[in-house]
Length: 243
Image (cartoon, rainbow, N blue to C red; front, side):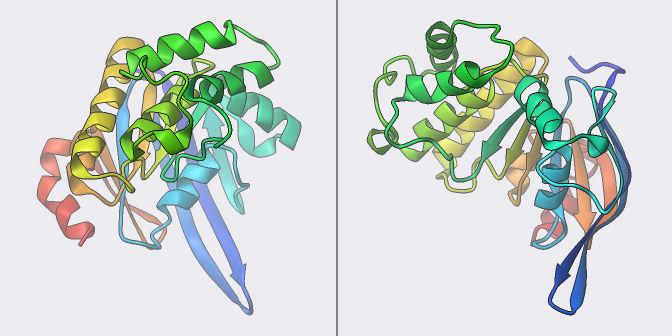
């Protein structure tokens, strides 16, 4: 379900991080395109710049140099109010640690982004129920996070990320805190979402098994783009990079 429309475009993306008297070059001129409907894995050793890249794509941080375009819009020149609107309308985030609000039920957690949206497209409770049902969580609507397993919490987090129907989903180690069975369920859910809705999904991962579920793997090493290829052609090299 991929097309020729570029939804993510980075050009010479650079991020320098001052660390005392030293400057850490987290990203060193990353240039890449990701098309609408792709599921892309970003891999590389610890400290290679994966999460930094994801944060810049999602507008959570500003680059030192270079540009990021989301669906044709240059987000690097936006102020915080404009970025908030773009994130709410075009980008869904999934984090390793779920970040659910502990006092709210699953349904209430998923409904929250819709309630905060400036342009509400959905009935919050109805949309939350539909998304949780899609992810096999319709019998856990009124459970709070402490009453859910790790895999169930992550599925609630995925539903929340999809609440406003964003064209782009960014996932930072979405299975990092899950056992292999729960991780497989989460990956199956992401593949179903991509297949049914055409959502573009970008996944940062250390797990070569997870990366191999994607269409394409982008490898970062020391802040540089090291490789960008179809999964079938880089199966062995991914495992080597992640050792």
